[in-house]
Each structure stands twice: as structure tokens, then as C-alpha cells.
Image (cartoon, rainbow, N blue to C red; front, side, top):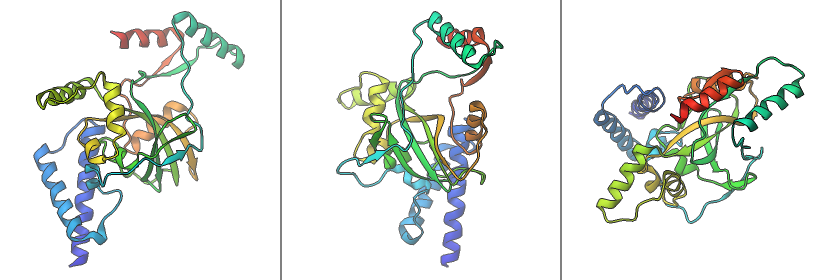
Length: 276
């Protein structure tokens, strides 16, 4: 009997992981929401009746857990430094020129372009393919442990796909709330007579830093990966764009507008395109 139950649980977890990937990463839902909810309830009931088979990477962990008294501190092995800015096309042109001079090569540079999302930078650590820790950027050197909350974000995989990932890999990216999710969150709050959020960034920050992860689970948060931190016992492509492509193989979501372009003018064209 126990073997049969474990097989059912394993099958349901795989089904739900596949559906999550199709819906949140590929943007190609494979089943109706009602059917997904039914499968999730079935898995939850089996895990409740058989707690010995509970797992930290189960899709049921996305509903949140017990409230915390406080957030523990996490030290970043590799500092999460802030991005520098170019205030205008002239500054970007000067940056492009400096890089060429340092490379002592006048050929056009290749740029990996993507929008700067207005959310919170986070670090997500996977060990043997399983999400084991998530932390805020904090001051760049020390952040807060928000593992339970990040697990509730629908497009964050609790377990990486495939089997060619490093033993340990730290994924960095942005947690944010898109306009549609933000508008609905505020509309629902107004109906209940509650205070509304000022902007999507505040809404994302307030949602991610809840001590009660069940509240976070109800908020329309999203995550896009944009870089890699610590890597242990594994190899990655040396090219940044190819590294990002590898992340998608493992089920991690990237901003759909991420694009590789050749030359300064192409990068500026990309900038103007996303402004429109």
C-alpha cells in the first residue's frame, strides 16, 4: 500500500511541476485551472495522510507555511552589487567607447539587453536541483532569508528540470508585480475597504517580506532570472546570453524581452523600442 501511495504522490508532483512549467514559463497552459486545483488538492490530501512522504520541493509548498517570528540573516558568498547607470545616449556611447579601448579592438560589441524591472533583487540557491534557500539583496552583502515566501511564487521552480545542472547554483533575478496583477490586487483591496498600494514595487516588497507566507502566496508575484552567482561542481557556458538560455532549459523564467544585439546603435534601438 505504501509503495502505491508513494507512486501516486510522485506522479502527481511530476504532473503539477509540468503544468506549472507550461503555464508560467512557456506561457502555454496544458490544463484548465480547475483541473490543476483538483490535482493539487489530491496531492495535498495524500501528503497530509502520509506525512512521511512530505518533501520541501513538493508543489504543495507553494501555498505557504507557518508564520515566522522574524527573518533570519543570510550572508551572500558573492556580493549582490547594484547596477551602474547611463543617464542618456551620450553616457552609453562613452561606455561603449571605453570597453572597446580596454579590449583594444574596434569591432562592434555584442550586448545582452533586457528591461530593468522595478522590483526586488533576490538570490535563489539550488542544491542538487532543489530550491534550498532564497534571500533578499539587502545591503549587497547581507540579506534576509525569504525561502518560504519565494517558494510560493508561481513561476519559481522548486526543483530544476533535467539533470545537467551544477551540484550547487545560485540564481539571481527580480521579484516584481506586473500591471495587471497590481491593478487587481488594489481593486480587490478597495472592495474590502483596505488600504491600497502606492505602486507595483511597494506592492511586491510588501508581499515578499510578509512573515506569514500564506499572505505572500495570495499575491500576484512573478520572478525573472537575470544572472548567476555561486556555482559549485558544474560547468556553464562562458557567454552570458548562453548562460541565460541554459537557465530556461532548467525551467527558470527569463524576461521575454531579453535580446542579443550587435553594436551600439542596435542597443540604442532596443532601448527606444521598449520605451514605446
